Image 1 (cartoon, rainbow, N blue to C red):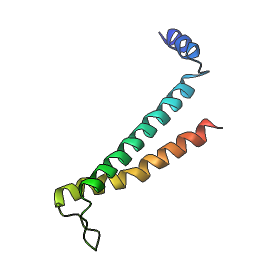
Image 2: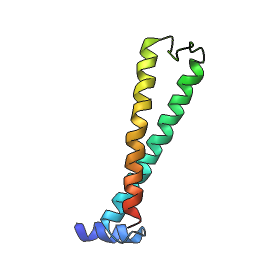
Image 3: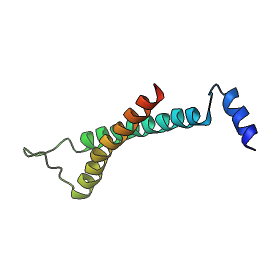
Image 4: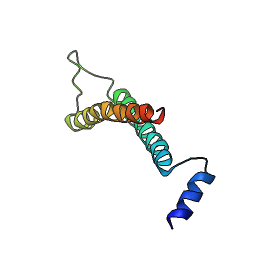
Length: 88
């Protein structure tokens, strides 16, 4: 089974399964990053009435917005890690 997987990976243009996994991990993280940024923009537009201290009016939405904001650095660092290892 492994040789069939290796053959398929090579037919897709990847020399090793590690290269295949690294490439698609990068793609998944990049997709999540774009998705989080989109959701953050949606929340910011939905709650454009932010008071002078930057506090959103609806607490539940604020928590979801905040969790998205905090997820971005983790995904950015994952992308950077994969990108750096991809270019070695």
